[in-house]
Length: 251
Ligand code: SF4
Image (tube, rainbow, N blue to C red; front, top):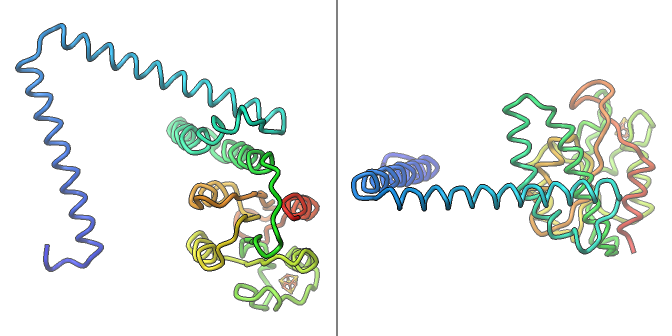
């Protein structure tokens, strides 16, 4: 593999590890087949049944917690841990199942984002303006606008053709940092560079769900955008909700 670059070497190394693991598992099963007794098989079946029952119980407890918090609009301390586990483990599995059976993943992501927000808000913590980062998707900008707002939102002329102008007014009033980003990679770089203590973000269901999952250790309050012209074009956002979410986390 000397002729390969670093990325390809990495790929080959982990592929070889996968093949080695598959061979090890196969050898294990062949040895089991050769030397085990029926009592041993029964134990394995019993353990497998026990694990599945535990997983079903875990799923039931986390689903109940999510539904309770979703309906109540508040996450009491009793539900914080199961809700956090649900956000990390249950939702990706439910999304996988929904994908396989053709379910509406965005509906599930909406529940994910609302549950995440409730778990962040219920904590009740307040932040200084300099610790807050507002992340906005580029598609909020009017597609015909010629002003470059990606590196500096202050280039916006607040002409009223898109929500960027009003958002700029709000973030200036609240003295928080805001950045317009073109995607997940750019968002991650900004977060790494500015190291905020909390993020208030606007995005579509898919980007928001993956963003919340990606950003570890920093709470994210998500606001789903609206897309009157379809995805990624001249999108908009509920400005009252945006202001409310900001005020909720600010000191
Ligand atoms: S509000 Fe700002 S970003 Fe939106 S169209 Fe006007 S100048 Fe461009």
